[in-house]
Image (cartoon, rainbow, N blue to C red; front, side, top):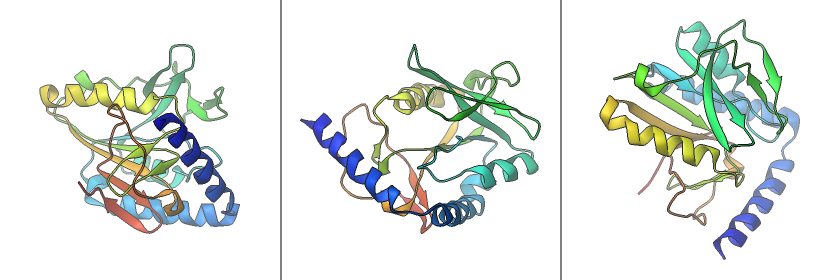
Length: 204
């Protein structure tokens, strides 16, 4: 039953995003990025785990450029479709990218170092998470493959042992926010949602 509810929610949100023009999406992306770049969560972060946006997601290019300029360590995901696993690899201004099976650009694994939590004890990590939609309580509706739920769950299990400070933020257009969302126990909740309207910290 809940899977059908999620499927319908994804369909509705997909249609909402289609109503945004390319120009509007660029404007909203830059505005949302500006809110994050001005936040303490960005300024205090040692490491940024970000993503390369698909056509129906807000662009993170402004964040990537600023993070590299600010000498922060920034990593982007590489997806293994056969094993349903995901890892993050470091990029810089000279990094090249390849297109994966989803049509998303990702870094060459041979060109960049993989993010390893055990090598970053005590670091502050900000994770920008894409999604089909987010609620004001931090609930996330992904695309149904579970890559981020699995990755973040494992990282959070290591957090206390390694003294990691993790800030999880959904990065989306405001039209993708609603409440409530159909969610399951394994669905990872965000600490905040960042849109062109500002940073919305999750309500319990």
